[in-house]
Length: 355
Ligand SMILES: *[C@@H]1O[C@H](CO)[C@@H](O)[C@H](O)[C@H]1NC(C)=O
Image (cartoon, rainbow, N blue to C red):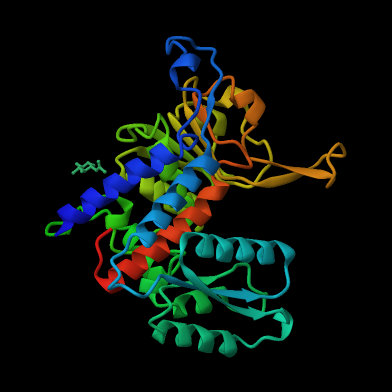
């Protein structure tokens, strides 16, 4: 059974990549070749925008080549509470991304965030849990302070929790299955993981898997240092790296000699939300930097008066590391791509369809 769909898949992947030559294009192509023994190097950008576009195209192709007997499509339900401009923008982007790849989406919007009742939101989630046209449920965060985020997220059916934030999904992510009789999961193939993995952390690993002309880098045995211990990124990305057999260290505000610890890292994942915190001198030459931070800093020279920077001093770090994600255009676009893939997985599992 899987053989045919696997074949279709790799064929689709081939078609996708060959139709989209820019997707994996970066300076490792021959005319940019650099000898690896040089210590002083200029890093190659990890083009998250192109990689995310490739993943979205893969999904689009899968959805447009389904047998005609399958008439339903994946459906994402989005809850937006309040009138934050940034949340509205994110929600619009997510809905557009669904439409672009052939998925359905519905929006429940509660603009009067301060007066919405928790029970109203819980009721909507229960309705979506019971609706078979809804395969993914996304609650745009943050919620107004009088609403318990935990209570809302707990109400989501874990199988529809495409953000991977339900405690049931978190608990599964944090199990290493080392005990006797445990079912071993294939962490090299995220779509085979039978529960939802949070989007941004998943996107970070997916980037590592797709650099080097799509060959990826070997994570096993590498020293990976994660900066920040948030539930949304730091903790889950550390677990994913551990599942890939990296040796992980999580550094935080109380870590002693943080620079020395980071200097040991072959892979650095920065997720603290502090503009340009990580200096080039903290990095081991040749390391890989995944910068999750998106911080705005004042910049009078731009039209908006600010610009976005990561947690890593990109311009300097670029001269030391081997691969680095730019901000914006690195990790950011991967979050939506992973949301789409989680929604696809949720739907195809409900339909009994192989990836
Ligand atoms: C990690 O190492 C274990 C051996 O302890 C191996 O069984 C497993 O396949 C490895 N995982 C990955 C993702 O390579």
